[in-house]
Image (cartoon, rainbow, N blue to C red; front, side, top):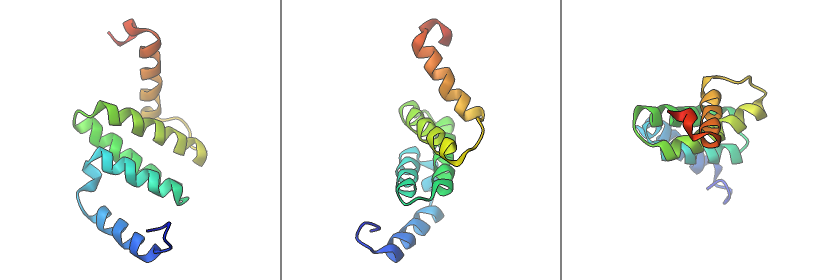
Amino acid sequence: MFALGRTEDAEALLREVRESDARTKPRTCDLVAELLTEQGDLQGALDWATAGVDACLAGDDRDELQLLLRLRYRLRVDLGLPEDDYDKMLDNKKAQRADPAAGK
């Protein structure tokens, strides 16, 4: 809708999504965060990416967790924010891939 110039409709749909239980669904959080990033709303995107990480940690979606952690990291760098505990989780995953014994 944004691409079609239907900004009001797009914003109404985003409000509807915000008011639903969408923040408990990691994939939805990822998609909304990506959309907001494209629209230049980095702070809003970071909020959705963080909600997605929280949803992953509450459930068992480890694949989406990695996507959201990377997106969240990029957003935080773009916003000039310091490293936090979620960023460190991403660092720990990189270390585990480099040294499989590190994850044990």
